[in-house]
Amino acid sequence: MKALQSPSTAVFLTVFIDLLGFGIVIPLLPLYAEQYHPTPLQFGLLMSSYSAMQFLFAPILGRLSDRIGRRPVLLGSLLGTVAGYLLFAFAGSLSVLFASRIIDGITGGNIGTAQAVIADTTTGADRARGMGLIGMAFGLGFIFGPALGGFTVHLGPAAPGIAAASLSFLAFLWTWFRLPETRPSGSGARPFEILSFASILRTARRPAVGVLLVMSLVTATAFSNFEATFSQFLKARFGFTPATVAWVFVMVGVTSAIVQGGLLKRLVARVGEVWLIIAGTLSLALAFVLMIGVTSRGLLAFNAILLAFGAALLNPTLMGYVSRRTPPTEQGEVLGSFQSMAALGRIVGPFWGENVFLRFGAVGPYGTGVVLEIAATALAFLGLVRRRPPEEIREPA
Image (cartoon, rainbow, N blue to C red):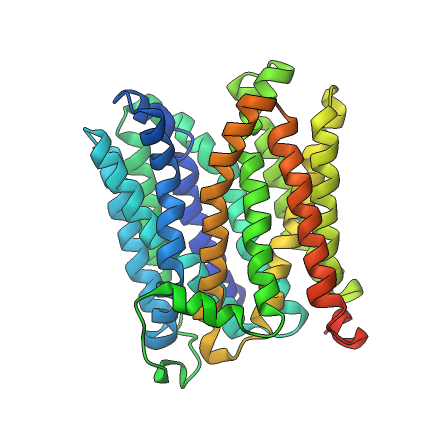
């Protein structure tokens, strides 16, 4: 019973339930938009509007959680998510669809606040494992969410949105009853700022943290560049149906959940966060190289698992590493800035990936992924390994 009442478990279940709703909506969004005949520009803006709002509002929500508390920010943002999904359910025009994604993107910037709860309540190697729990919640949400969406859409066009809103409201209730306030005392002493760019610049000036901020942008761009084109790639090269594509994504989600939920803490204790970050970027670079020339389903499965493994190592370890170099009173702001840069990468990545995939095939997005992950590896070596003493690089505790 104590495990169910711990803040880490409460955040995991909150994010998981909320991401179930996200997983329901995202596969259906392009299909719903098509009935309004959007131009290519409108279509691109619709698909990136969620991440654009996250880019702007994640640091704001993070700073707000430093000032008034993690719990009220999470509760308020979950109610906003409910409103966004209800708009999606009953949208009768493209403009209402835009409104639903904008509202959900603004409130979806709460992931940095959820990560701040983990940072408030963990230390040492448990920090990376705690961040991994959020990553596992993402993976599981993307496994079961699309399946629920495929089931509920048969009940009517509004049913998926209603189901997603119901799940987010359930997450709201869980947070209300199960999540205690974890904000350290003294966090609200700093003046509150609306503009997020000053926050990002302030975060970037921190020793080592600025390098990780750039890595967040680079790696998010690389991976979203892959995600945006993967379904088209599988259809073009292997003739996969939507159902077969879904199973590939399930395999990716399961791998990610296993790594982040079980293996990550042991790996951090053995080799340290910095070397796991480098292992993650190199794994992703290798997977992108192999993906360009893959012709067999066996190698495709290996590549998909390698991609999931690399991402599962990289993302929570980056967040754990930076959160342990941030004062307790500023966790929300710094982690919100990281989420903002990742959101910027998820804006740039899909636009670039789609364009180069249509022009050059697989070598476009996956060749881009190789270059970006090699750049991230170089940043890790130059910014983390060379500037840190050996005992700090390993940091098993």
